Image (cartoon, rainbow, N blue to C red; front, side):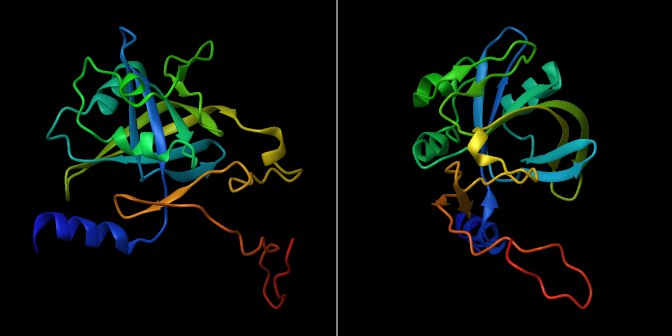
Length: 199
């Protein structure tokens, strides 16, 4: 297959994915922002998450900054910023900040080296824990521990469930298709012989 056709086809097969902005800064404070559609949950205790970084064949400012400072932020994308978020995938130079290039606003929390995206409604910060090189295709699994969460009070329920839809979080499919969502239902905990109920 032609390269770009194959990439669009295979990237679309997995269906809807989480799409986020990773904020980083190098030791000198130069900020970087990059869009990722490979963010996933790894465990709740300890609170771990993973991100897949593409093969290290071109300068990877996000990867370098995480390895240098051990700090990065994950920022949900909403309908108001998805075009700017998409633009962060352009190949800017190491001395250019995607915040400046896209008009997104960095802000900092004391004790966290990496910048957050002010326009994001749900933000978390991670401490880098482990790198695993996937030799099959040269991608890199980066595992981090969630050390900070910021989200609207009305988006979190009494049981801890975060209603990302009420916070305006969008999803993506493939490499360039962005979507809003509509919940069908939340269902009760599954038990043998008991039909799930709406909760």
